Amino acid sequence: LDWLPAAAVLPAGEALPIGDQLPILFWGDGSTRAQFATLISERVCQIHADILGAAVFMVSRWEETVSDSLDEHGRFPASASAAWRHRFLDRPVIDEYALVLQAWLRCLLPGWQPEPRRFTVQLSHDIDGLRRFTPERGIWRPGGGLRALAREALNGRPLAQLRDTLRDIGYSRRHDPADSHFQAIGRLVDLARQYDFPAAFYFMTSEPGPRDDGYQLASSPGQAALARIRGAGHELGLHPGYTTFLDTAELERQRERFAAATGLTSYGGRQHYLRFRVPQTWRDWADAGFRYDSTLGYATAPGFRAGTCLPFQPYDLAADEPIDLIELPLIAMDVTFTSPTYLGLTPAQAEAQILELARRCQAVAGCFTLLWHNGTMEPPLDALYETILGRLRQLMDDSDE
Image (cartoon, rainbow, N blue to C red; front, side):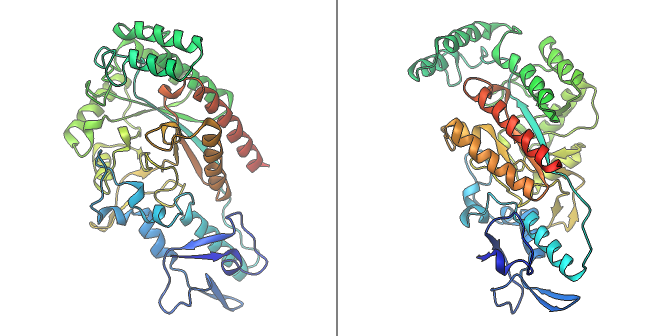
C-alpha cells in the first residue's frame, strides 16, 4: 500500500479536507505509483489508482470471506483487517476517493458540481437491560451488584454513586422505574431532543442467558419504555441476542416476539456483541425481512470497517448479486473507547477520538453513527456523552452554514 501526498492526488488548484496524504490500496496495470491521475488533454484524464477495485474490496468486505481469523465471539477481528494493518481504519477512504474523483471531474468539466449532500449524525442505543442488576446474574457473579459496588469503592467513586448502586442492587429482585438503567432510557430520549438528533433504540427479545439479560419487552416496564420513545418520535428496532448469530430459527423467534410487543413490521437493528459474518448475517437479516442493519463496526477499534460512512446495499460476491438490505455502518461505540477490555481511554481521550471520527465524516458529507448504551449512562460517562452531543451539534451547524 502506498500513501500519496495531496499534491500527487489532486488536480492543480484543488484542495480537499482529507488530510495531507491519501492511502492508495490498488493501482492499475502499468501505473508508475506516483500520481493518482494524469491529465491527458482538456477533456481526458487517466486514473492510475484502482478506485473501483478498492471500493469492491472494502465495501463488499471480501477479505472477511477468505479469512479464518475469528475472535472468541466468532467475529472477524479488526487486527486482521487491511485497514488496521495499514493504519487507515480511521479514514472513510472510499468516500475520500469519491471526493478526489469529483475534483478531477470539475477539472475536466468546468462548472460541473455533484448533487449536494449534508453531513448527518445518527444516534443509536442498544438496550441490553431494563435494570442494572438481575437475579440471574447473582450479586457476586460478573456483572453482579456487590462486585460492582466493590469495584466502585476501590476506584474512589463518590458516596452518591455508591448509594445509587446500593439502591439498584435492591431493585434486582423487582423492577422499579427509579433503577438507573431504566432511567437512562428516558435521559437518552431527552438528550436527543435537546440537541435535535434522530435516535434509534434497539430492544432485545432474547431468553435469559450468560450474555443476554432476558428482559420481557411485552412487560409493563418494556411497554413504558417503548411509549416514551414513540412519544418523542424516535425509532424502534431489534437488538437480536447473542445466540441469534448464524441461527436463523432463533433470529426469527426473536423477531416475532419483537413484532408482537411493538406491532412493527418494518424496522432495522443491530446484532448483540456486534456478532457479524459476511455475507451470512446480511443474508439472514434480509431473509428475515429487516429493513437495515447497523452492526458493521468493530468492538475493539472504532472507524470505518467498510471504508465508508454512507449507507449502502451489500453485495454478495460469491453469489454475484446484491442483498435486499441496507447497511448503515457503525463508526463509534461507547465501550470501545471506555472499557478496559478494549481501548480503556479516559473521558477526555475518548471525546477527542470520537470527535475526530465525526470530523472525518463531516469532511465527506457522510453519516456519523454513534452507539451509546443505556448502561453507559453513569458518572462520568453520562457527562461525556452530553459533551459529545453538544460538540456534534456544533459540527452539524457549522456544516449547514
